[in-house]
Amino acid sequence: MALKRKGVILTARMLIGILAIFIVLQFIRSPRNLSAGESPASIQTRYPVPADLQSVIRRSCYDCHSNNTSYPWYSHVEPLGWWLNSHITEGKRELNFDEFASYPVYRQLAKLEAVRQQVEDGEMPLPAYTLIHTSAALTPEERERIILWVGAMQDTIKSRYPADSLKRPVRPR
View 1 (cartoon, rainbow, N blue to C red):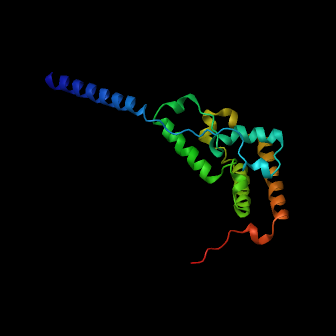
View 2 (cartoon, rainbow, N blue to C red):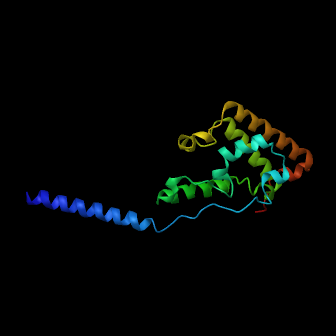
């Protein structure tokens, strides 16, 4: 009987300790990805994005691939906020539509190819993201419109710039 009581007390203390840690974590907030206004280096400053397609891209891509994220309620609960922030940081590192025009031309072309491939393969938006954000899921028609638009932008880049600027420079060793 005494061992059972000690076990209950130990379990209660562990639960109280875990709860105390959880409460303390709520005071250590993750940074927010929020910018004011339109970026001067956004993709639409250099390449035309039809308004209807822009709304699809904003709905399905911008939370992780722009400088302005719409945060769900659960992002205010740590450590979920930190986890989301790490995904947003990684997404922006891979492609940031708000900084796209500042990329070198060869990188713009490569990023558009990555967008085309990942949208075509159904890898983007991430299935884990669309589980919770069902409105971000792309319809087959939206996927096709993005793929066609990306192809047109790639053609535009190839026609505007010399071929040697479309390849990543080789760094001397």
